[in-house]
Length: 122
Length: 194
Ligand SMILES: Nc1nc2c(ncn2[C@@H]2O[C@H](COP(=O)(O)OP(=O)(O)OP(=O)(O)O)[C@@H](O)[C@H]2O)c(=O)[nH]1
Ligand SMILES: [Mg+2]
Image 1 (cartoon, rainbow over the protein chains, first blue to last red):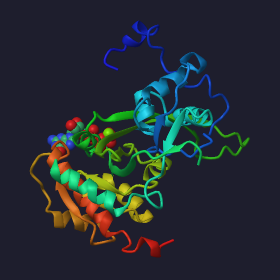
Image 2 (image 1 turned 120 degrees about the vertical axis):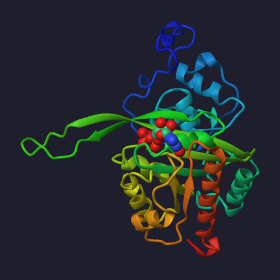
Image 3 (image 1 turned 90 degrees about the vertical axis):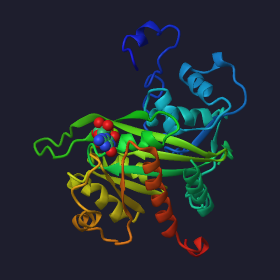
Image 4 (image 1 turned 60 degrees about the horizontal axis):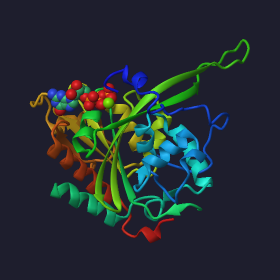
């Protein structure tokens, strides 16, 4: 954050992501969500019916796939906190997770070739 | 699994190396977004057993993790994950390395030894890696052959390349070398392997 005072000025408009209040006690997420697992919001939801944290995640994931690590960074929290929230959202069918990469959770030779071609063409 | 969609596939590359070897700079040079950082809060049972009462003391530390992304295609994303500077956070490395295509290990030619733990780590786990010598001051004191000799790499086919972490084309070339090396190490017939 550029200006440390900003968070106070803006607090009422954009509440800070509450890291811990709603995940009490549960240390582990129930779904296996690795750092690069892709997640996207699905369906429509009444914002008033979900927690502030869930609403923030759903807003971030509207119309796009993002990785668990990116969600954590955008919301200034840790991946473990995000994992717990995403597990809840998965249970409620408000988010979808992308299929794991390739056959054994690893990218295919074709995907790696595409990466090389992209880097060469830049 | 329920709630699964198609979603883009991801290719994950680790950027490792000793303290201040240019990891964050390299991630930033390749990423299409400014490097993101997430602070992971870690609770660890501190080392050393309290032999008087068996009461373990827990310590909490934060470790910054930076990463970047490059969208290769609508269905394919490349992620670069920089390892935490201090190599005592091994379990963080374990999580980062899971499913990784390979690692780029940055070395500062003036302080080669700071990258030894990273080399040991990926060598021991059989994760493909390349060693990129970050030319901090443009001029180098040692030839690549001397660096290779000093690094004592187990596998002589591990690519050793020079790069400038601030220079995007140079970082891309190093990444290409890594992905090519990882592909060369893939089994020819994936079906034949369990
Ligand atoms: N001259 C020069 N400076 C560089 C180069 N690469 C990185 N630097 C500088 O060296 C310093 C360390 O680079 P970082 O990218 O922060 O290194 P790091 O490996 O992420 O450091 P830690 O996360 O603290 O371990 C920064 O001030 C960079 O600007 C280079 O190729 N040449
Ligand atoms: Mg760094």
